[in-house]
Length: 124
Image: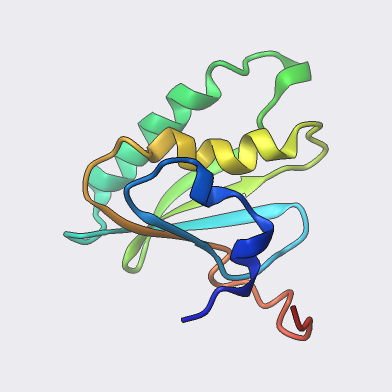
């Protein structure tokens, strides 16, 4: 599959061993589907949640809020929802989610906004 939005993001500069692609855009919300070589399960969701919680804990003041983040298990992947709301440094959070998980073993790929159809009519 061709991911036309990859050129507009710098996920390739993060030094991950797995592929990261951007499938769509949906305003101030980002959804990360994390696929594992051995499939997704509750243990994997917990591992991702702890890694993201550790990353987010460095931004513990109201002025330095990284956004609303939720981790859950969905069919076939660990799903991370990021709502940027009124965040000042959006890039820090958008890329920070991937930075937080890049040392977790067994990740096959991450697809950002895979289910988003907000850009279907926009030809890049």
